[in-house]
Length: 317
Image 1 (cartoon, rainbow, N blue to C red):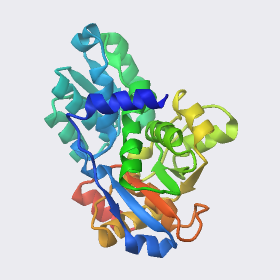
Image 2 (tube, rainbow, N blue to C red):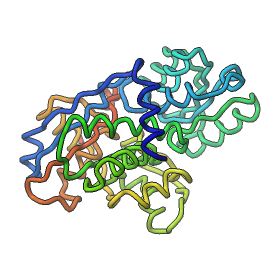
Image 3 (cartoon, rainbow, N blue to C red):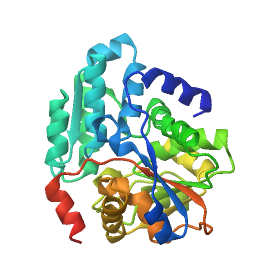
């Protein structure tokens, strides 16, 4: 992954996606003793950053692959994003989602034109079914994270962030399989290597942290977290070495920390974050990061797709 590829992705997807705003969050920062800036990817098309990578991947397919169609696996955000990207580019899309996936995310994927296959109790079983469909129907599998073009599209978040907020000291990014942080790290470290980059995972889905500790990409036997968007059961073979080489550290946060961050972001910044989207802010507020007093810190609010019933449950924790 390199800066030229990310810039090419930016040019390719720019006519179709939003340049999302970055907001200062004075009260959140005061609670942590730093200056906080929230990159509002919850305001992106389909409600998350995922559309950047999904669209870039679809637009770079050859004609034969476009004609056959694409398939993916997702707890919801990548499913919606790929469905939207497929509709935009005229490519048929099949998405495999766990049976417990958010009904709102399932309905949104259907509304964008995807065929939705509900399979398995977790993303682990859903991954298996998605690859079965890939071979049965000769579809092109587009990974939610472990794909060069998906990572390049996600890296455009980093390009925008550095233009919007000068002199950042650190950027904090949630990690599922690592596509967002890999792309952003490649962009940011190429443009300003002084900026420290921290990844954040739920304690119940620590695939990248365990991979770093093991020195190789590993697969989890089980995942359990309220942050369904971060419940990837493995670190990517492509994302892992980028994170290993470019990211300063990866920390873990508990579900209660994430729930508190959802509430704090809504209350003090007036922004709705789904649990996965609030994980980076949770790490800042819970003191899990080695940040100096007064540091200028950007938190990527990666998505805001949460229905009201789920939001009530999260806020009541």
